[in-house]
Image (tube, rainbow, N blue to C red):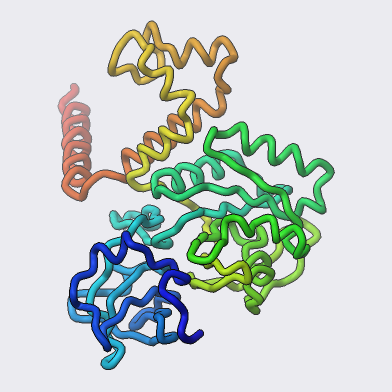
Length: 345
């Protein structure tokens, strides 16, 4: 791609306001399309560029979709332009860091399928992720042609949250893929997220003409298989941009309290009616949440999912100091309990 206007790449006054007189004939804005271990690829007004990073910056600090200022003459990134938003999750395992998924995203396209992959609890996580990232959530339900009642899946998604908008498509049908065009206008950016095999690569291929490898549908679970192993930014035939991501086996939330509150707005609206301001919504008298569940006004399974997400987000959002303090206190309790048992006659 050559001589592409920055606005078509997603550049806006918001980003320009953070940039001073550094821009000149050689130092130009570039948008990251690929992040590798030791270098990044960027799209600039002059074309594609392969860039190295300055001392003190690692590829772990960057996400596909980021804007940087780069010296095109030397092929080096100079600085990261402040993000408009970023999609992140907690890294796997005991790592306290957040893993960056994509940056400067307008729409989070949450892809699932009208079969056994459909999972309300996982969709609520993605909806909370979108809300906490300040990205518009769009649930794309694929394999609609294989479902007896695809519309029932769409209705179930829309019952999960007032934020949820859902579309059912056959990702192999170009006329149905065209229904995604309003979210992919020139300058717009959407990120495809979801489990492996739900059709993300098929959507990418259809909307961009890319050649991401996809394999056939397995008869036992109706899941396609693909080989997407990294994130990339690609232009669509609609003019907008798609960030493809590998399938996620898990989605631990990180600093997503606001997003959870938005997805479960019906629950949060009742918490002010509880008798006690510190109500945990378990067995406390005068709990408005428990009363609504008992009356059938709130779904009990969804209530338990709400509590689980809140506990998990609080745990994952701990600072390193808070985690160490908690582990230290836990160790003290264990030692105290063991001493008590040893001292008993």
